[in-house]
Length: 269
Ligand SMILES: NC(=O)c1ccc[n+]([C@@H]2O[C@H](COP(=O)([O-])OP(=O)(O)OC[C@H]3O[C@@H](n4cnc5c(N)ncnc54)[C@H](OP(=O)(O)O)[C@@H]3O)[C@@H](O)[C@H]2O)c1
Image 1 (cartoon, rainbow, N blue to C red):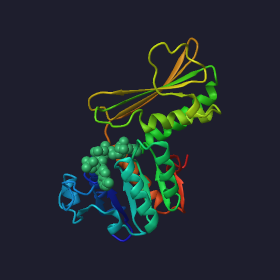
Image 2: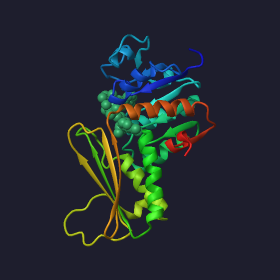
Image 3: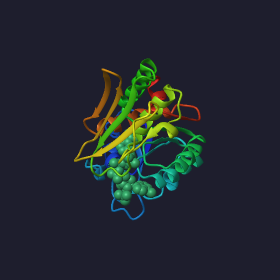
Image 4: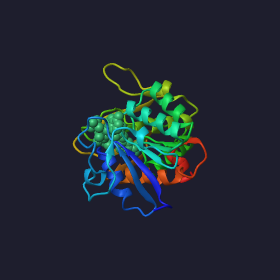
């Protein structure tokens, strides 16, 4: 038990939180040391293993991270923007490492989150999947190789319950393309088109969000040239790839010096 990395799962009754608890308890390198839900949530006071759909784990879901958090913990946050910020502050104050998967933060929240995270060691990634991390690398490489003559567009598809649009992953892909083209995504990203928008400018990076059924998460990056196009596609078949990536990040970040890291750092690419 002592060489296991102790985790505190925030949002333990959520879709990702339940999966994280279920997978972490089976991992010989990890231990679920704590679980947190929003005050008033029906899971508070219940056993985290049972909330995750398994047997009793001996960890009670609490509602106050501060009361649980220790410097040796890795805090995993898959909750909501305001909660993620609060959890990052607590983790930084108690010296715990942090893995944040929560998306949908606005610019101000993102800056505040990164400032808190920089006080400790943290991985922040809008998509924890190893496949998407490699896709991001390939997309940046393709943008550099194809050059300005190829026009990038991003299409993402997610389940009908997803709250934010476009996905944090689509934005991260857009940023990677912009960076590879020496551009600023906040200037060249076009997050929606409607009506008489006129011809597409060569600098644009379009992003379209589709919502349907139970799609876990598809991302397609299309580079349109003249007479040809290149498409790079990632499809998540289940949320397991996201949870497994987050647990890999947790194991990795536990041994790192202070700093804010990405999944690229976790994979060493
Ligand atoms: N980076 C990635 O790879 C990745 C993968 C999947 C999802 N995500 C993101 O992770 C977040 C959660 O996704 P999900 O699908 O698991 O959502 P979800 O099923 O809605 O779970 C979120 C959980 O967090 C809880 N929560 C809200 N505020 C809280 C607080 N202050 N303290 C503790 N818990 C709190 C929610 O409780 P209530 O039900 O009471 O609100 C809910 O149980 C979203 O932002 C999503 O986009 C990221």
